[in-house]
Structures are given as structure tokens and as C-alpha cells.
Image (cartoon, rainbow over all chains, first blue to last red; front, side):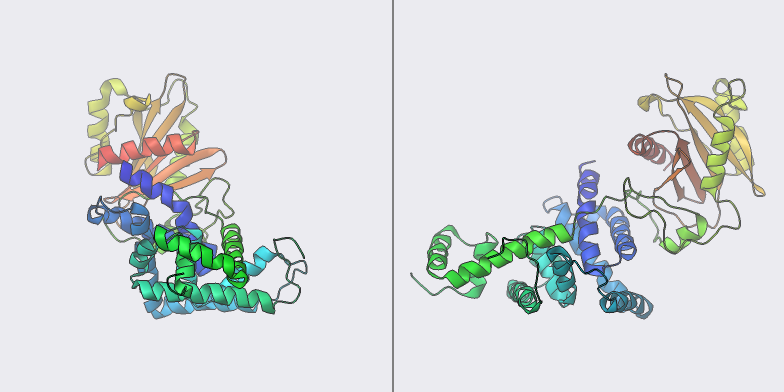
Length: 167
Length: 241
């Protein structure tokens, strides 16, 4: 049962990652569900030496990539993204948190994925490279660009409300 | 300072990926460069805000190992409602359509509600005649019908009954534990249904785990915690596999 326990323990993080990636929580949970089903079908392919968690993340990203290749799915994901991008910011009292989430969505998906794996999920560079199937140099440049872009967006915001104390 | 600090090294420093020797050098360099320190502070703030902006999910029911590919649409057509997760912000699947006919899990929950409170006739054939019960249900449902043993979880078989099922038949086994709590296992042939993952449904104070495996729909129904019921459902699944 150790394998199943590890899979179950990873579900909340998989949901978080999928939601940050897809924005739509229902599509995100569908993706996680697809991932869990594939993981259980392919559990014999999992090598006991590796971490179940990073194996699951990699699998989920592969499934998502496959989904994006199917034209009808692509349209569906893009429709969701457009709808959310153009939605007016109705709330006046914006918080830094909402801003950060919004800024994050303006990043290219590659950069978003890299930053989330490192900064939120706490994977090592080696693990993140394996999950994303990219060399270390690529990971580093995506990470650097993501961090720089988020800094830049903060600076361009009028009157940002920041978490740290005001000067 | 042995060599200039590259931006990549700052990221590695920040993410705890530098060798110890280089780490000390970069740390010193950062002390001498306030603008670098400011950047690191910003990254830390970003990370903290990201972690708060994207909280961990509330979990999903773990699917059983389905041997076939499985799509939500197939399931959505079959079930009316899928309430998932305790305290989750969402309970309804987007693609669910209103039902024309009762789904197996609804039939299972109805049958449970009808018979679980029976004192004198909870079952049609009692466990003392289990062989007869299984042979009878196997004949009427088609296939080899078995009653899983849930004694390890404290539930013993009371017996079972035959139920109508939209032209086909269905069977119900009833179990009881020492404190008198009852659960039922509903078994119904569903020839064309795709195999599914475990699904959890919480409806009007009654809970069910249900799944489709090898042309049979199963639903384990009771008033029990999700974890208890899931444990029992896994046990049932493993015995019937």
C-alpha cells in the first residue's frame, strides 16, 4: 500500500499545480483524475528508486501536453483562458495575492510551470528537469525569466498593495 | 571573491542548490550588493505569495486500477451527481446531464434505504443458505456472483435479495456489524458500461462508493464515514477482481 499512500498524499499538490496551470478548477481536477488513473494503470512501470511524487507530476504534464495536441481540447482550454484574461477586475480592493496570481497567468506556460515546481512544490532542479523533460540550462532560464517578469509586473502596477511593510 | 557571480548562481543560491563552498562566496557577494539582496527579497516574497495564491487542493477519491481507458463523459452520462471531497468548493461535474433513467448508484441507494431498516425481513435469503443465495443470484444476474467477506472490518453477511433493474436483475447483499450498523452491496449487470474509477457519492445523509468493473456495476452503500466506506469498498473490489 505504500505506493497508493504516496499517490494519495500527492493529490492535493497535483490539484494545486493543475489549477495554477489551467485556471479552471474543474478542468484541473479532470486532469488530476486522468493522471491518477494512468498512474494506477501503469504502477508497475514506476521504479521503486524514484519518488512517486515527481513521477506523478511528470505523468500529469505529459497528459496535459497530449490533450493540448487534440484540436477540440485545445479550443476548450484556450476559451477558458481567454474568458478569464478579459474578465474585468470588478473588485476594487485588490490584494497582492490576487495580483500575484494574475501576474502568474500572464507568464508563458513554460515559465509558469518551472516556477511553480521550484517555488511552490519545492522540487529540486534535478527533479524539475526530469518532470519537465528539459535540460538544466533551459530550466534555469525559464526560472530566471519567470522571476524577472513577475518583478517587472509588480513595478508597473499602480499602487500595488504589498505584503511587506510600507516604507 | 574567486569569480563573478552569475545570475543563475543567484537562483541556485536562493533555491538551496549551490555547493557549500560556492554558497559562502555568493553569500558574501550578496552582502556587498544591496540590489542583489533586494532581488532575493522579491523572489522570497513572490514565492510566499505564490504559495498562498495557489493553495493545495482538498484531495480527490483515488480511482481503482481501471484496466481500460476511462473518460469522464462516459461516467457523467451514467451518473447524476458526483459529490467529491470533504469541504471541497465544488460538488457538481460540469458535464452532468439530467437523468432519464435511474443510475445504478441511485438504484443501490434506493434499495438500501428501503431494506436497511427492516428488522424482520432485511434480506430475502439469509446467510445460513449462502450457497443457495449465490447460485440463485448468479442465475438471475448472469455471471458468477460472490458475496465478499467483510469480517475483518467487523461486518458479517446477513444475506441478500434479488432486485428489479430496468429489465435486468440486480442483487443486494446486506452486512451488519456488532453495533447494528448496516451496509449494503448492490450488484447489477451493466453490459455496455465502461469500467470506471471509484466514485464517492454523499446524498441525503447516505454515502456510497460505486464503480464498474467487468460489465458489472457495484455500489457499496451505508451511513459511514468516507474513509470507512472506502476501506470496505477497496476490500470488496479486491475480493471480486
